[in-house]
Length: 309
Image (cartoon, rainbow, N blue to C red):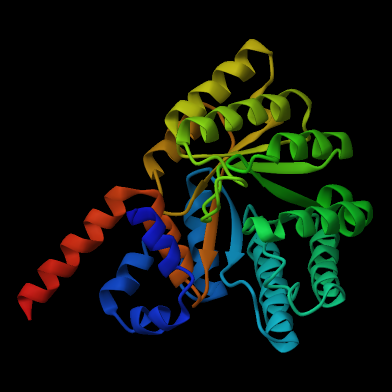
């Protein structure tokens, strides 16, 4: 019930305006978000790279309401790619199609993504198209399959979510296409006819999809902090003779830094998803919904601050 409530709050812009003015909430967000500017994000990349960890920058925001806002987001991504190249950081970028204007018009979205993908291709970089709620799953895959992958091939990749019932079929299609896939569990609130309501089913689907991607996929990204999923990934790769250079683990900025470094020491490739920007509220709520320990920390801090007043 708490998770459902937090996910609902993540979609309330009025609450965001209140929360953003709260200093404690901003400090809590800094645990998961690398500041609000490209400069702060690049600094976070440098620190990760020093530890041998790669990055992917994500400019926070989705469902923009105007072409101007979509073009502004495109400009931020172009700036981020240029800064990554200028400082020699080991990083690519991740973006959402609704931030590129998908709800405004398909061509608006395509034009903005093409501009970013073209820059990434020229620089030898890569862009990951994030998956959003299930209402966008088919549209995202259609655009990726029909428009972006045919033009940019391995410069672009996509994300699939194991909590969706459809994902095993989508994995097969992306493998046949030769697409680069990031596999995650999924963080949006969905109905039981669309997504598995029980964690054990989400996990079982994750393992099944992970095994197919490792065996037949194109450099898959195994995105999880679940140590059981990580152990099963390593065990499956070892059994099938799949070397660590054929895939990478991905994790979130500020989450399980100890595990990130442990995997690097074991010789695995690790990439951290580094979000930045002033639209951090929805992202923060989804991170709180995922980990009860984060909620306990936030509530205890709020109580302590109120007692000091």
